[in-house]
Image 1 (tube, each protein chain N blue to C red):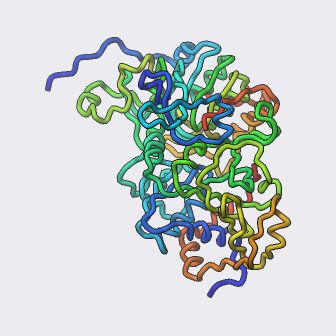
Image 2 (cartoon, helix red, strand yellow; image 1 turned 45 degrees about the vertical axis):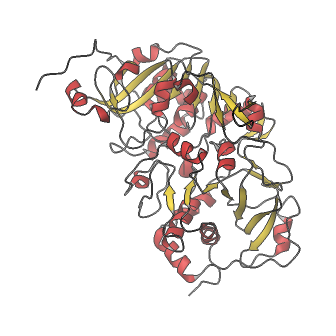
Length: 109
Length: 157
Length: 245
């Protein structure tokens, strides 16, 4: 069996370096749905790096939206629905920021 | 995001009639040139970045997702640039042997990071389920700015 | 033997199940333990050939007992296909879904639903979870059934603060009974045992009584027994005990 041709240089990088690719003010979407397969470690690193002014877009966020809201990283969020579901209830820190007026929300549905 | 994945400025959509979602979103209707019906159109959403946590990837960003991909595939096509975090990095041969299992082609991907447990405290089945204690711990810590900073130092990555 | 006082969660699960007609393609939203249980119950009783698309993407799964979260792998147990979120929306938009179960924070007399904000849209008094596609789904899915685990005038308002969704809402199930759409208005259709029409009227923020008598909704012993088998741990109570939004 012939070995496959490598398709160019490796794109492997560190978490910290990958996060640094995203500047303040960028619009970002995160994979996963609610408590399923969100890129939680990446989101924590964004918060650790104190990113600001991000515009989050995601149909069904939970941990990602809530943590970045709590960390003050977001300028706005465009969402469909957010909840931590039966056991934990609403995305409380996201909700608090919106009710205080520090986070603007755009409805998608 | 679907409109962005098609490279078009807006997309017709059914429903939305009489809702404040349409009003608040500033959505408008257009007249379907073929049927004459009024239909809502929503503007495209093209995020600068999509960040996806996947199960397996090679060093060029070809990635496999098990279970439901959710909206990940549309996101990978709608965003200008894509970053992946992956439970495991596998050799290219694995992906060459079954390219039909690749859900995100590496050609869409700008960077890839190996982060086992990278979705935790969220689930990444079949590898791990939701870590309820971890969710609770986050929710409690985030009650204060200081608590959140401690949480971020403790749960790293 | 039917207990004289079936718990309200049981009554609601049976009432929700009975809205389903055999052969329908049904789905539930997120945060939907009661609706999920109702679908399981309907499938085990009068609607064995329903098709169920779960919010996790499974088609006709066999989860065993009721899982707690929509992320639970149990929702994909036994499924032979995965219909992810975009696939589900496309199916609904082209008319492939018959019935959907939705929650709502406010419901008004014109069958409009609010899942978005209470108070001013830009600086709300209460930020709710959001519509999650309801604005589209309530118009492309022909049968929409809503439920709430409380029945108060703050929920059943004359006019919602924000119209998240409106269209094909046909029934609302609460701890007091079942309300139905009648000529574009929400009207009481059946009451649960031990509940008077006057009590329901007093807890609804708009006129809701029909002109004639309101029948009492009675579950059968078979329905209650199967319900017990499906959720022996009574996880359905979680919807009632958690702090309401």
